[in-house]
Structure formats: C-alpha cells, structure tokens
Length: 352
Image (tube, rainbow, N blue to C red):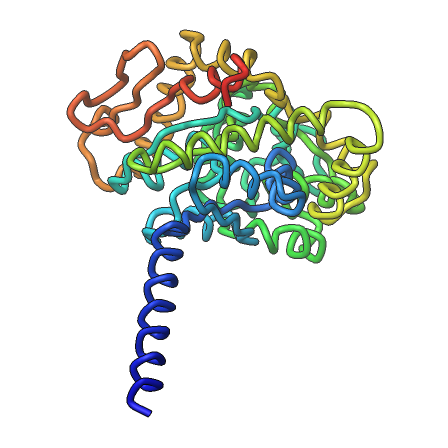
C-alpha cells in the first residue's frame, strides 16, 4: 500500500514536472489587436488560415490575434494591457495614444496609406464650403478629425467653422443614416462605403487629396521580443503574396476578407482601390526612408499639439519621432515613435 502511494506521488511529481516544462517551452502569450479596416482585414485571414500560427512556431513565440470592434478600444488595450504588444493603428493615433502616453513604440510594417479610404460625407451638400456651421459626427481626435482639419484648411476654412460630435466607428453608419437632413460625418472604410450610399449624401472630400498622410501601420512595443516582430512581419508579407497573387487561393483569401469586413467581394475590391497597399516590402521601405515622411510627421504632430493631444506639453517637440536614418524629430531624450525598415528589409531580402 505504501509502495502504491509512493508510486502515485512519483507519477504526480513527474506529471507536474512535465506540465511545468511544457509551460516553460510554450512561454507567454503575446497579443496583437486589430480593428476593422480595409487594410487590416488581412489579419483575419492570417489568423484563420494558420499562417500566423506557423510563423509564430517558426520564431518560437505564442501570438494571439484579437479583433476589437471599436478602434479606440483597440488602442486603449495596447496602452493599458501588458499582454498586448502589437496593434494596427494610424501614425497619428500611434503618436497621440501610446507615444504621448509613454509607451515606446516601433513601426515594424508600413502597411498602406489611405488613398480615398477616408472621407467627408454630408447630406444636402455638394462642396466643403456648404458645410460651414454644421456638426460632424466622427471619432474625435482621430485621423477623421485630421482629415476634416486638412480638408477645411485646403479650402481656406478654419476648423472653428464647424463643430464635432464624438461617435464610434462601430456606430457611425447607423447614426448618420438615421440623422436629419443636415447631417455630416467623417469616417473610413468600411463604414465610409455605407454612408456614401445614404440617400441625399455626397462625399465632398477624401484622403486621396493628401496622399501618404494617413498611414496604416502595424506597431509593437519596442521591448517586445524579436521573435514577435519577425513572426508578425513574416505573416503580413506571406498574406500579401496570396492576396496579390492569382488563382483559387487568392480568390478564397479575398472572399474571406470581404466577409470579415462585413461586405461583398465587390465592395471589398472597391475599397482596396482606394487603399494604397504596400504589398511589396521594397515599396514600403522606399516610402519609409523618403525624407517626405519627416515632413508628413511634422504636419501631423503640429495638428495633434494644436488640438491639445500632447497631454499639456509645452511644445510639439516633447515627444521624439525617430526615422530609419537615425534622425529624430522632436525630443532626442524622449523618443517614443520609431520608424524602422529592419523587419521589412528582412522580408524584402527573403530572410524571414
């Protein structure tokens, strides 16, 4: 009897040891969160197809991708949840959310820029000049707000000519549709495609007028493991090859993404036409190394500072933005947003 008890204890101890070794081998789970947007739907396919799991295994990390239906909440999760190490985000929101909040953030993939995928839509209006005095539904202090600011500015109208009302991207389509005949909104696809089709609505300005200024990025916390950065980058470009290829696999992937976005394949294809996708890493590298990126960053940070999005800082230089050549815009002692071509270059060289 005593031998049986002893044997049971040994087995239990051994099993416990195996469990512990297995847990150590598996390691922590790193989360990457994303929200619905044409240029980010590939992450749904990356997860469902097993491509992310394959590359995670290759680089010895456990990565979980999680869809957050509200874009603002996805950013909050990245900032506040230590297990979340990556997020799909625009450069402006990366700067004013995590970076101003003290989260050191690295851009590992420049995925695309909006080339008509963000727009200003209003009922009973034909031009921006018709919108003076109106209240715009939008995600306040997001790229939608920036687009409104730029659209008004290009047409020599100050931002004070209009008012804004904060509406989440998840609700904006239904709220705009039901709103009175003087309604106006600023949003991105897929909601943009819906609001454009509302009776009496006209798109009076879109992001194709400011190419390269609304960038859609994959960012990670700078101290995240190299394996996470490599696995995510490898996954992205593997999906890009399928997405921009030919044949049954490409059709299946695009059909999946369209369904994930909540629309038809035709609608998704139309949205892709207004998204300048950097499906070739070499093109993304060229864009990221271009001196114009610093000019765009300065334009964006000026808007952010003027909007009071720098948490009471005395200068727009309070946060540093670093570029691939090592140059820094803003504080050299407080660099929080880092553009790098390191991982995209590995993809371009076929080394991932």
